[in-house]
Length: 602
Image (cartoon, rainbow, N blue to C red; front, side):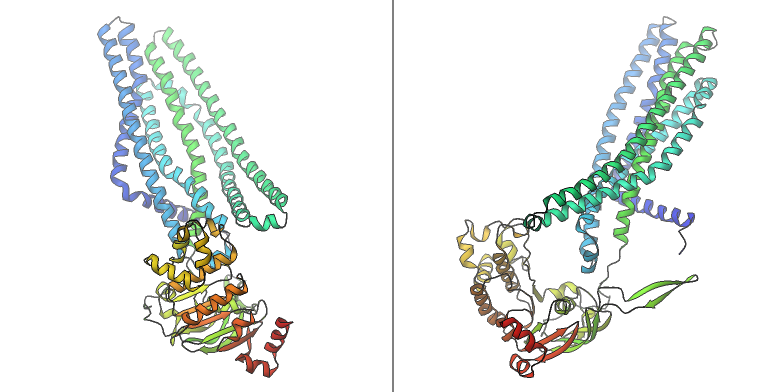
């Protein structure tokens, strides 16, 4: 495919700028006051050099005390007005910037929350965190400081040029002779800074991603003694980040002293030519003094606009990444015709279901056309066709990678199948809205994830309105009460991030209590008892006998006690169903299940 042309690039940039302006629209009243403050502040800042020149020419040289006093009074008034309006401008810019930052973070976070599970499988959490922190902060600098800086400095530049021409057009033209050099310097800076600032955004994202991954897996790192390996990797990433940032330092260190040099050259030219003209009586001394003052006001906006371009590059690089995230479409969405499910009976059907985590269609180029090229993907499950009756407990067994957990994810619609469909109570999953549907499903994964907060808050995660008595009853039903009572604060004990204050078995008990309190119509247990000891497992199974009464359950387990209690056992191998029946029937068949059973018991 051909690279995007200039028109497409400009159109994309225009869309991003319009979107950025849209973030400011809710605060247009304050922005209007901010614009007024900028106008007044800029006008007040332009007055002092002229008033200083008038004080010399009309007051000091003529000996007119009243003219001198008037010029000084107006000078002081301009300074005070400039100070007050600058304060107001800074406060309004800060207020709007903070609100926009808040809105943008919420918008990005809401979008991430809507994304499908597959999105999180493809994107590292650290990179997403970088979008929410580093990139949004860079964009905020562009929105809050950049727009005001652009407006104020352009206004100042126009005002200074107009005043210079009115004071003395010859001195003004001498000042403007340095502009071509300044323009060339700015164009070179712009050319090299774009890629440099984009590189800094990518490098800090990699550092953040590695940091997040290392902190999340710190126990594994310690267990295998791989601290030095992770430190070495962080050193590499940090060095690459340093080099990327040093490239911007070199650019800034080269550009800004160059503009300072041009400012000095302009000042020397003004003093030389203006001095000669003043000596010969062709120009008043105060005009030369005013020009020297305005010369600094002339170059300062140009320098700040160049610095703004650096901020613009950083902001646009960040905006590219934020847009990439926001432009990522949600893979699984509710159709307009989807309904809230009534109370589920719990019938689950699979109709010729096939699913792969890969893309089964690969785009290939054919001349100017893009045509789908069919490939044979590695199917996680293939041609699955069976039904689970309401209230039935079905165990899915098979070796690792057989497709057991994939079926569980498809039931909860974490993924949509490429072929076939899943039905709940005779209707395809797509006919139901996702959130109301999942409220009637309970999932206990192999590792119970707990959020920061108390045990009670984690148990009530699915039912935030549950009473403390209901929470305690759910904990008691799974046998969690004895260990909770041994804790200093009982149900109010803080579990720490990811539940680090509890053992893996205790975390799993809390996860069971959480799903029991939610009273699901369909219960999915994905190796849910693998982290608890045999005694605790028996307590949980006894509680499950009551919980599963009248509910449909899909159990993925290797423990024989759990499997043998199932009404039916589905044996999977390489994503296909190879056997189905109860324990005794499958043992008698002496097939795949009998072989697995023999390996488990030896």
